[in-house]
Amino acid sequence: MDYGFSGAHSGSMETFESLVCAEFAPKNTYLNTASTGLVPARTVAAMRIAVEAAAAGDPTDMFGDVEASRACFARLVGVPERRVAAGASVAVYSGLIAASLPEGAEVLTAEGDFSSVVNPFHVRSDLKVRVVPLERIAESVRPGTALVAVSAAQSADGRVADLPAIRQAAREHGARTYIDASQAAGWLDFDADAYDYSASVAFKWLVCPRGVAFLVVPEDLGGLTPLFAGWVAGEHPWDACYGPIDELAHSARRFDESPALFSYAGARRSLELLEELGTDAVRAHDLALADRFRAGLASLGHEPVPSPGSPIVSVPGLGRRQSELSSAGVEVSDRAGNLRAAFHLYNTAADVDRLLDVLSA
Image 1 (cartoon, rainbow, N blue to C red):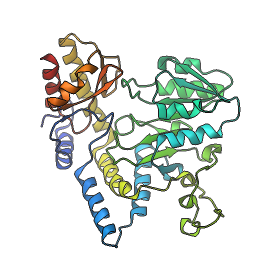
Image 2: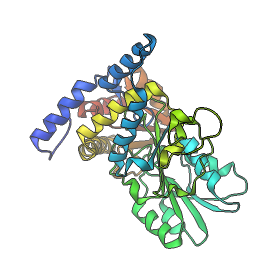
Image 3: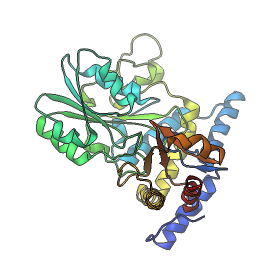
């Protein structure tokens, strides 16, 4: 397998390749991680063991898997695990943040951002939601802006937000920041500690099963009310099963959703794999493949949406060829008429060349 590392140390390259080859064996040219990531073999095995044990009446410690997943995600994004809530949906966490805002608060969002990020703010008719182009987010923060809510990388076309500029502008004007890292966590060097809130599903670039998502909150819990708190949100969950919870968790765990346990049994293994590989190595690999595709597109006379530093490449006018590509064993997405290809750790230079070959036909 050609992983296209031009400047990597040979030892690290061999380790990366051997780990990936041991975990992934796609039967097609899969370039659709921006929709759903492939699940590692170790994750499949862990979920099978958990399901079979439950069927036999002797379940494994899947709540332990939730805590291990929480801790691993916390390490990946650079925060203490006490600041991480475990759930299943970014939309739920966006709604939680939206519910915390006072009437009339101004929320700044990006045009065409993913609905799970922005829609919960729009459905509150008493909020002032302002929408601007992604490139103008930082300059559009103003006195009175309460919250800036934006994806780190855009789902539709891979454009990466200028997060440092957004953070600085928000601080200057006293606004809080909410970053959706669903299209970034796993490859981007994302420092969740730099923002007030961040959330991410894990079934894309974090190669976890569906049903896993995380929310990062400030040390002071960010003024959020745990509106959907169930028994798992108690400081002592097994003592909080009946009646009102006497003592909510003192950490972000008060914002936990009741976990999809089988998914978390697998997620633990997926996140451990990403720690073994290292975000820097994954990013270098992914971006090298995306740049190879961009160069190939130029030779074919196509110009993608500018998205430097992103492993997501979106090509206007080619979305119509998605079905044809799928029939040829190449999986990509059609997003608003654009062909969207997403390159991740299990992809190779041969995958890029296969996509270009089919497009050139």
